[in-house]
Image: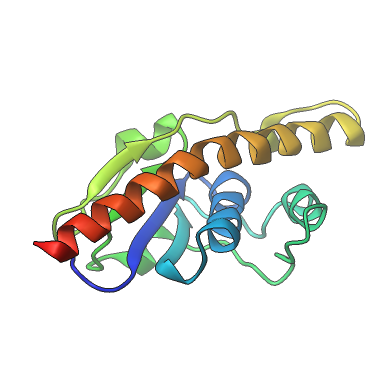
Amino acid sequence: MQSESICVLFLCTGNSARSQMAEALLCDLGGARFIINSAGLEPAARVAPAAVTVLAEIGLDWSKAEPKSVSEFAGQSFDYVITLCEQARSSCPTFPGQHALLHWDLEDPAAVGGSAEERLEAFRRTRQELTHHLGPFIEMAIAAHRKALAV
């Protein structure tokens, strides 16, 4: 897909935590160069409130986000499909066109028990892990995109 934008889909099981946070963070860090979506194999009823909270801690308002099903993106082309859990990787549907399939296996913060603060810490760790992955990903994706457009 050779357009001006780099199209990315983040995929996990419920689209309530990891993939929503990845979408929000890439929107913030990657800017207008990226068209970003996220989806789940089995979408949850709502985005995890703790995900909204830890994104708000860094100035990102994600309060209006809703989980989406991967079926909403059937037939669409992406430059990158990034799975964030083993279930998403093993059940990832096929998307048309040439794209890179990346896998970042992250713990599901929504599955962590304990006190409210311990659960928030799990979401903060996920936010930090995603930020750690996104820095190099953004650089790589932009460089690859420039190279593809130059051909």
